[in-house]
Image (cartoon, rainbow, N blue to C red):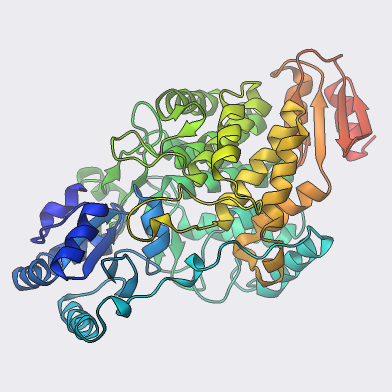
Length: 537
């Protein structure tokens, strides 16, 4: 149970089969509260709604109340979230959804309680339904065609906000993967978005990026800071610096690393998140000095640390910042030693942690393949990839998000697009690093399993089109030296970010660029490599 449950008066139960058995035996529906430690609305609902004695008594008498930390339980989150936090979801004893909502004050909560009772009394277990994304056995498959990338470029052009930067005409999310996709296809859009994100979402005093802006003009930022989102922006700004040489992008990345390695550092790895607190963030810098900083959840999550390792090592590759490298290596070593066993990755270090979740496997694998490219140190990358393929890939080629068992709807298949993209991207790199084409073949199968839906994808999943492009036209830069030589370091800086850089300690001292299996450039010195890759004499 999370530590904030004590602020309520509800007699919460842990998620699991026992709670649903209790609901079946008592003939009561389940009240599921999905909460996260970084949400101010979660704390407000705890105090103002679940802390109200009459409401709590009503819940305790008429429902089986279950509380779940959504960050620690991603499978529950993905099946039951109402689109934000807190999510309050009413379930049948079989785990099907009766209804739900996000934040509810006391009056709104009383209203939904009455509605659920009426529906339950009238229909019983038949009042529930299964969300559509859990009804299909597999996503719509198709071929990896050039049209997929073309469609995504059209989406970029059609949805870009020419006045304020970013994509969309309402709420503005940073979309770091979309920025990276645009950097090599619509660079002006990418750089204008980086500038907007840096101007409006960066905390200039404490450091780190806020989650998103509620206004189209990037106004009214939501001030939570999540480690994975900050890590993804470190990488996006580092890429922006690599392509443009703009020192402001490097500065933003480095200041965010400073935030991650101070406020969000646990002495072993990166913490999960820092809560948003509007009152604190509206204080002047001098007043912040004497105020308590917002709560930091020090849980070390495998997926978020994988992203941080990846981002920090690419920033090191572009800048030679040894401090950035040192923290990435410390996090990498801690996570692989603590959370990985036989290739199976634990979500976090705890008795109740899920293991083998697709996003954990994929994002930690991504961090390790980057470690291999930048430092020549891949750790258990192959073991993680092999375990994931053996235990999570289905006959269709698609990957499911976790085991096919669990309470409620957790036994139903869910095929997450974002995690599949992360995994496929890492497998493309692993195939080049190991020389084993089987990893690329698995990536093709995984990405093909969504190709039938490609024409319906928007800019928020531009990473899908990016990995399709990598699979259709693989680019590899093999450096025939140890990692860390001048030639290798130049390769990391000069290769575009969709190219895999392979250090080969047994090589002949020559760097060769491959397009597929064809050598298209060769060099033995950094200067020669720059000329060969850029065409500049």
